[in-house]
Each structure stands twice: as structure tokens, then as C-alpha cells.
Image (cartoon, rainbow, N blue to C red; front, side, top):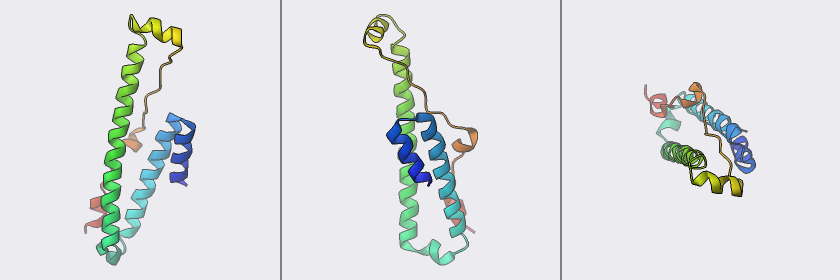
Length: 118
């Protein structure tokens, strides 16, 4: 469900919904790894370790993309308010964009490794 919510928010271009959907997805992954803690044979499985590594890589990539998006939005929003860019921005109808923001719970890093250590 969380993954579907992320995809829907991306397709609709709804930045605020995307932030909350990604937060829900991260929480779901945290729950998955917490459940896996009870199964040592699963933790030792090569495929599961590969999954952990891929998720960590994806989370890092997503964090980089969020930062890039917010930086781009900030540059756009400043430029369309500065002279002489404001003239062209108004003529062509350029609009400001909303920053991708998260609640404090959504910003907490999941320490997946700690879920697998005893």
C-alpha cells in the first residue's frame, strides 16, 4: 500500500502527499526488518542481506534526490523574484514550487543494522 501511495503521488505530482507516502514506506520497511529480527535464519540468508544492502542504497539515493529537488526549487523560487528574471517569469507565467518537507518522525533515520544485531 505504501509503495502504491508513493507511485500515485509521483504520478499526480503531489509533493506533500509524496513526502507522507515515503514516510509511510520507510516505517513499513522498519517494521519488516523488526519482524525479521525474530528469525535468525532469515537474517543470515544471502538474499535477505542483499535486500538490506539494496534498501540502504535506495534510501541514500532518495535522500540525495530530495536534497537536489529542494535545492532546485529554492533556486527557482529565488530567481523568479529577482530582477531581471522576474520580468520573464511573469511574462511566461513561471510559478514558485513547494519545497518537499517532512515531519520530525519522517526525518528520523532508520538504523536497519541495529535491528539485526543482538
